[in-house]
View (cartoon, rainbow, N blue to C red):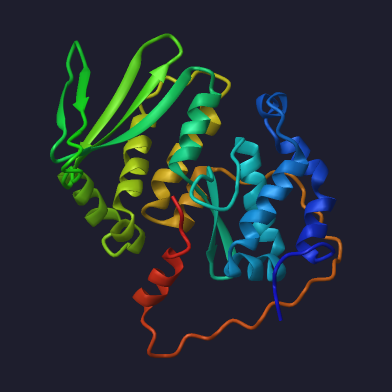
Length: 287
């Protein structure tokens, strides 16, 4: 039996009944930019329908999904399918965890009104690259441009530059050794780091950069909570959720609704190791 979320199923009913809460959760700046509850609902359903695991949880535990969605909305972040999403719904057992991606951190910084842009960049072996700190911080990066030899070599550095609205710039640079040490310390067995090292390096450097941004009053609280959540999630997801303080304060409608029953999940064999289960879970984690 298919578990695709269609019209008249339980989770869609739950979204519809909570449309007023979604509207109340959207930050005023995002309302002014044209973000509507209908767009939020379409984006959420698109993300859920793109994952068998999320469809099952939306049918069996819709409140968990709804709370994560409202938290993303409160922050002004979009949930959608694909790697361009700013926040992601991550299945963990029969629960859903909200994961803030590096694009989400960038959006939060820009929404503060004090950051014009944040751009992460990779430096390859054959690139010309140098940077300096001190009283005159600067970066010089000339990418490898040999048309006959398109192989620029291995990744050496990742950096991110935040351009502020007052014309100043703040940057963060991590070399490959520092990134590898960070991975070994916090995620030594992570499949997502092994398969998508560059994207995870972007997120790591942007998290570090965001700690130094002079985000002003009125926006600082949510921004710092989001940065802390993103950082803690690389170590311990349940602890991250507890410490971050990012939870939905809006009431959730729990009126009885009819759910389409999901297909029974396969029970792992006794031979399945804990590490295999963790790696299977990580396959669903985007950037």
